[in-house]
Image 1 (spheres, rainbow, N blue to C red):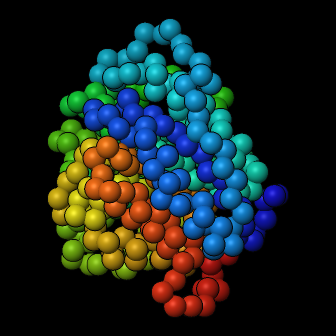
Image 2 (spheres, rainbow, N blue to C red):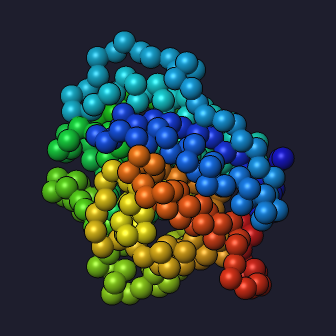
Length: 320
């Protein structure tokens, strides 16, 4: 499918079963759980053609022997994963399909977003990223407390120093900080908070969401994207949701988005017509309750791709 102004009708799935970016094991089972929960069948029921590219295998990865930076755990392994993810993401976006990356921990977004951004930069379009997450993931090796690299993804994507050699220079495609939106925050490290205060990152923490509501803030961010004629990548971390709705994650934080709030986010994104790629990360089936979290994530994907309680007309400004 070639690039056009019409909304794509093909979705490409790619599993990225990486778990070493986090401290809790089990996220490598996430892609299988999402497939078992019926993500492909749901998308097909919404009239999308689904191309499942399977999972990236460790056998496909190339490992370097460079000295890793301090405070970046499993650096060489993560570098191999995101390098392959970035290259695959670039090819999938270039095909005209909507790539969906099935994780795996949030370090995979260093590769998925970079590859998608590389494609859109070639089209002279700005890629905005909506980070649905309890955490900012804006640490660097200089600010991190744990050294876990899933907490550095946002900072890396915005070109913060410390992980400069994680991708080849010719493949690196950073976004600027005003193109990053953090939605649902409720756990931010001290030095990470200080760094964010110096940057033009759009932030809607749970206090703002409680005060103004999901719809007001989502409209604000969507208009931010539309004002720049941008396109949108959504990066959904399971811990964006309250643990009551989504227990299957290793980084639960109380007070997250409710089931209904999360669906409203997805429905408004679908109405916008701006979404061109998606991460589903940090699902840990080992910690789940009989597949509840996987089913919830798949239901949210349904809302993002047009499943409705009742038919509503598509807004006239939805096509980009």
